Length: 323
Ligand code: SF4
Ligand code: FES
Image (cartoon, rainbow, N blue to C red; front, side, top):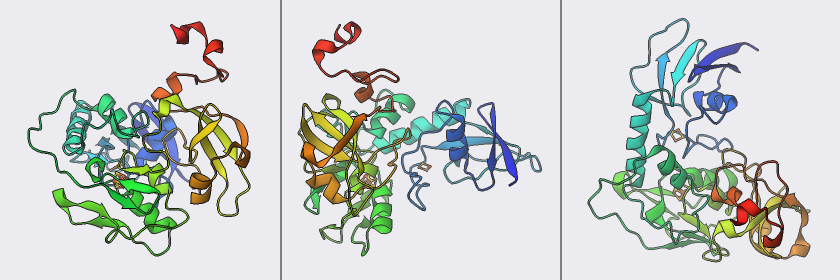
């Protein structure tokens, strides 16, 4: 197979034809990978909605070295041989991304102190790492009533950034789609045409793919901040999905069950609603051990550090963590 050479932020890699700039950057590593709020590896046609992954193509290819005239969405632009890309090394990209973050936050409420997604919210991380420290927006934010999507999911449309990931889940994992985006522009909203329950066995994956706290698991809402829980890899024999999950425990009690996510915050394998909502007894699961949360989230700041052993109780915590 012919490999194409691409250089991103001065690091060169060879990738197969058809690879996007974002995928190539992820192969190099986190230091050059652009943030991505709407692209999701396992969801076909995802990407191209949020513009957080913008990069500058300073050399188009070996054959045609002209730079691309505008910043491009790296999740939707494929690599050409000899292409040179700037991400964090381009002041223009850094500035443009600040603008994108500001737009994403225009209608987003300052709900973080009460939002279940706090601690694992990609928008929090994005605004902290790539945004401005203050808002220039002076107008009223748009508001919506909370909507039940089936009996296990609640939609807070005020927090939605219209990334379309949940729509792709509804489209690609559940038959008979009843969930999508209605209207356009600043009146666009997620809807279930209208209030039809999404009662499919795989609908719970919408909660896992939502990068913000717009779709929340009603069996877990307001029960605990995620950083007070201890995540464990576990599995069970399931006839609907792989049965490989993460149990989020407080003591021995299982507070919630989610899919396992990779270092980019994307689910490895979809899980069914039975595993997610109905198997909350420790006897339902075979535990494999503590999960290393591979993001720089507060969850990994407490008991979980890369390469260290899981610490079971405050008495056995290393002194530096207690001080
Ligand atoms: S509800 Fe969540 S997953 Fe769905 S479009 Fe909004 S932000 Fe994206
Ligand atoms: S991740 Fe590329 S546009 Fe959203």
